Length: 171
Image (cartoon, rainbow, N blue to C red):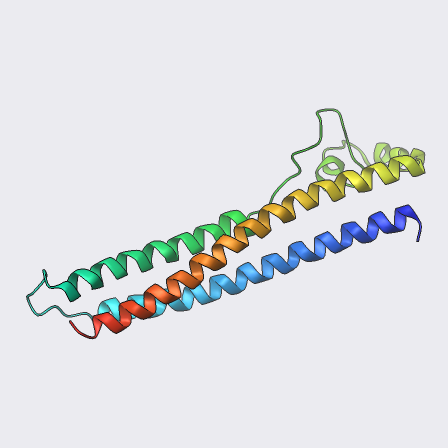
């Protein structure tokens, strides 16, 4: 395998991992939506018997607040740390890549773009590919971290919701 093919396969692999992380974040959002539905339904069914200072009532309040905060955290992390589109951050001001869509979109005419592609050398191709691999790897790293914390918050919210439902039965 030559280095250009290797670099292209590395790029494709990282792009596939990014899609996989986005799909996982989508699954986390589906679970969070179900949790939110169950949570709101459970809150709607709560009836206090006039004793708001009992240990069970206070525990129910604490669990409802923690469940709500964990659900909000899960939603925030999934949307803003995983699914939010990102642009490259590591190109210098005059460093234009023929492999990066944003740089291609900023070109003013098709003929100039064609001329640049026509003049490209193997070293430039490899440089463009490795620059883009660097960029998507940074994006993948950020998405993976966001997904890790999102999934942890989701699992904690499921636990908190379960305990909340059990405790609220005793009110």
